[in-house]
Image (cartoon, rainbow, N blue to C red; front, side):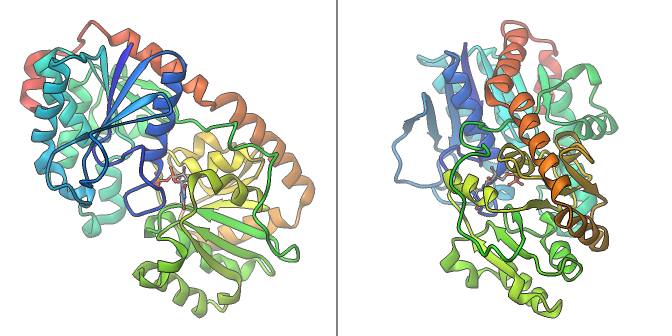
Length: 407
Ligand code: UDP
């Protein structure tokens, strides 16, 4: 099949760990490569945010197309909505030229808008993965949520007018049902992990052997729960907490949130046991996972959560919060332990218990690596998604009239 993907803000070519570059970038890059590996022709359309790269870049068997829409500079994703019309128009022109896709898979709601708008001009079926939902963000962030005003209503409408919604976990199904998206619109296909890269065997980042290491990984944003982890550390004596993500090491001092985390570590009297490592290249992530006794993932909410899965694939048990995708990927009491979100006390107790019980850690580690390899390989995920694409290619399940309303 010819598969067009739209990932308006999250380029598969971006370095990960920055405020707007995380799981979606990694997901789109790995999925496109896995589909190309299976013989499909894949083009990923992403907004041009830098004048330098060529219009089309070929990477891992697929093409990344830089779409001119808005200024060719980095913009916050919450500021991109006004450019989605231009994005759609340019993309539709590309499809009317020499490359007509069989299906378009949009990633994130704004890509969904661009996809539905472009597809009406070319009669292409649209598959949508939200990656994150405005309703969940609003619930947790309240006034701090900077999403465009009508995000939730657009997301609700998109769920009804696309040909298929690919959800990534059970929790997302529940949220979409609450929004009024029919269950019949949804197919559950989780994200995946590159099990050739993320595996238990291989080099590990050097560390102090006297100090058990708790690793946490992600964009340096409050909702990832780093503050809860720092507050939990006094009840895990002797352990160090390593936080990977954010700006590169040399620029952490300029980051206000990194400074806030350091100040909090001082207040909790654990400054000597908290280390901010800054951004790490994706290819080096397995070394960091392998260096840890446990991966802690303490988000307040999490649409899917690749880092627990990557750690599991590396044979590292997870102590995580029972939210979003973690409740599917982490099997409580088998591959890790789940605790309620925003409860540093519970988090500390779970970490302390696991670090004090080597037999439990070894058994979790083996079960985690097995589960990641058997259920979440990209080959498996790509095969399931290709079946979804085939099921919608050539037929539209939703009315043109309802799509026009969204456009
Ligand atoms: N990541 C990375 N370098 C970093 C921090 C994160 O390569 O310094 C990667 C990490 O390995 C994972 C992704 O960024 O693949 C984060 O995805 P996740 O779903 O955990 O969180 P999101 O960023 O989507 O909220």
